[in-house]
Amino acid sequence: MRPFVFVNVAASLDGKISDESRKQLRISCQKDLERVDKLRAESDAIMVGIGTVLADDPSLTVKNPELKKLRIKEGKSGNPIRVVVDSKCRIPINAKILNGKAKTVVAVSRRADKGKIEELRKKENVEVVVFGEKRVNLSGLLKHLYKVGVRKLMVEGGGTLINSLISEKLVDEIYIYYGSMLIGGKTSPTIVDGQSFSKPVELEITSLEKFGKGILIKCKLV
Ligand code: NAP
Image 1: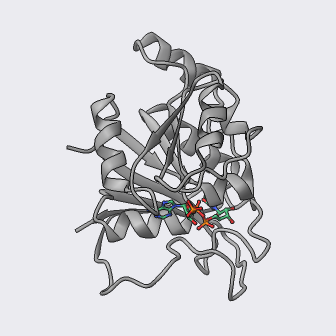
Image 2 (image 1 turned 180 degrees about the vertical axis):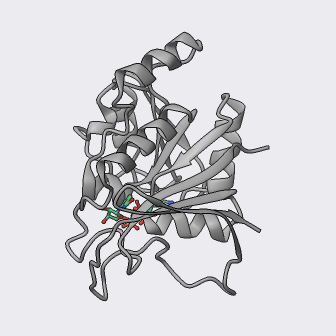
């Protein structure tokens, strides 16, 4: 058993999620940021790859205090669990995602440095789990998350992690907000990076709407 897994990502109309610098770019409009905050508040856990932590240093917490209050009223923690997929345990010890404001699970593989793992384990609200030999075994990780009560998992990127999850058929839905902009650049990261799929992945578009300054597309993996 694994959680329901959905990907939410913001891209330019040419499918880029950042530019060549790989630094965080503001693609979402305010209305979209509010939608993303609501999605976070409705999720049990939020997952990102280490590439995103190194590039953006996100805190991945719920920003709207009302949404936090609602979660607490429902008997949940104020923020969902944060999950980082990080084979070699490269996460900086002062990363915002390790700030203790919410529980963080760092998923590493067996080649991660033992000393670094111990250092992380000393931090408040941080758990380190080991799945896989070279890379993190995603299906093992998802089974573990299900066992500890995660039923709805939001994946916020980046493109390399999204590629692996889709390749391994571990994604149920994908929501893409297309900002009204072009980013360009041959090496700019895209929604799905890594290697191309062995054959194109078919999607069923379940909704499409003009949303704020952009377009919101929701798809199911078929
Ligand atoms: P990523 O997908 O966040 O992280 C990928 C890394 O995760 C891999 O390089 C690998 O590094 C690790 N990993 C461990 N096990 C894995 C597995 N089984 N499958 C895949 N990855 C695994 O990094 P990214 O593709 O470089 O994306 C980062 C870029 O995306 C940044 O530019 C960021 O700004 C952008 N971004 C944009 C949005 C948006 O919505 N616009 C959202 C998020 C990120 P190790 O081998 O070292 O573990």
